[in-house]
Image 1 (cartoon, rainbow, N blue to C red):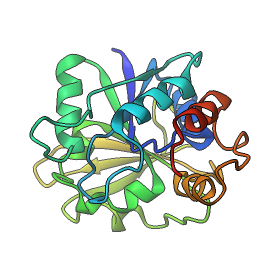
Image 2: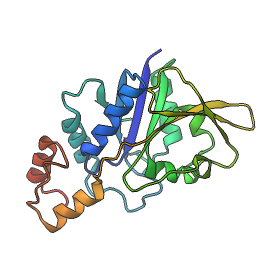
Image 3: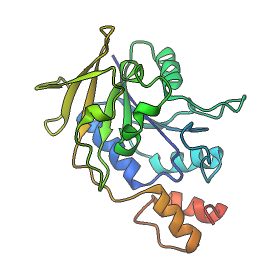
Image 4: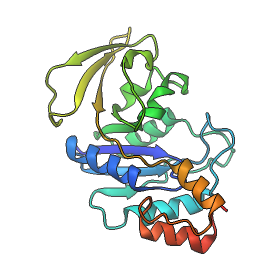
Length: 227
């Protein structure tokens, strides 16, 4: 059974923090592949991304070039109708493309904090195993506060395929569905895409080689993004 991580987001731009999360989750859960999926239109971000979808896809390709087990996915590409991209629908498409695969949905703590407000939130944990990566300055605390209220969460002492530092939980729905959630603590990479965009907006020649891969920085310079 292939083990596939789905890592969606704006990737506006992709940075070393994204790479650190993907590497850590891939190693901890022994994933065969991690799919980076730039999103066309996020329902909870009506202003949209600053860079175009095509630019974000190309920057993502450059960011993960040469990284074993990391690939770009276009499953979350903009829809012809202009409708927003819903994660639940995208996961269903992935499962149709990869029948029999064990799918893991990789979320940053900030995304997980908004999970209750997502379309079909109560069904997402049973369409894919949730993997939550911590963010600097964010204390997740009681995980149940961020889950749809209909779901129950139970700590698991042991879970096959996970590393010792990960915390594992079982999720259950009133209808008897069972899923899993993994929390990867301590992955504090102090980089955010919004900070990178702000730097580039105010200082076009800002030094960002420590924030994004050099190929991404060069692409941003050549295409004069975020200015």
